[in-house]
Image (cartoon, rainbow, N blue to C red; front, side, top):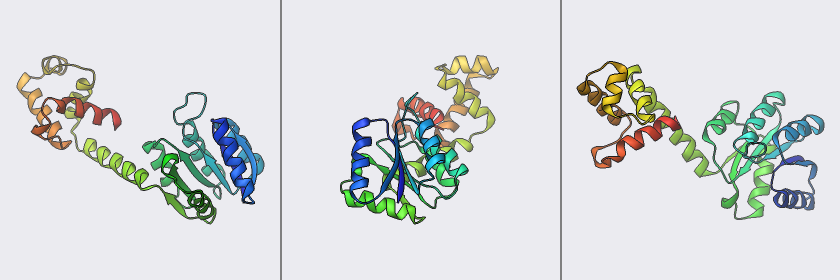
Length: 214
């Protein structure tokens, strides 16, 4: 098959190129950033693009965002996200656009070269290949989003101010509420987010983390 590789680590990029060409595949391009990836896919029209998540310039999620754009521009393109990071938001969006011909594997969990090559074959054939850990984290992110969606507008306001580090007294002043009302809202937030009293003082921190992740 014809393949384009996007990997900012030069040693790994060349290693993937050598592996794939030694197995009879054509590596049409091997690039180090998302912009070059999109240009290479437009020029060479590969069967599959192997994409890392974090690439220049910000090293956050450029690879996944490029993959989403490429799938929309080239619907028949197979995409294998091959990374050591799981980015749940864009991974879920990539799958939501059509999971056929999509894969997401974690570098440290691919113990056999044959498994990697088999994944490429399956993706080129239109199948979906996902590491179980990727599935678990995407589902977990979905559950967190559902929990946040259950909060009332007032509870979200309270949680937003909690995320700014404000005390219950400060929240009461900002929202023109009584201290007791803020306490009740905070208790409801803990309940809806599944934070039990056994979490102790950490519940406030955990609630804020859920809010930021959501």
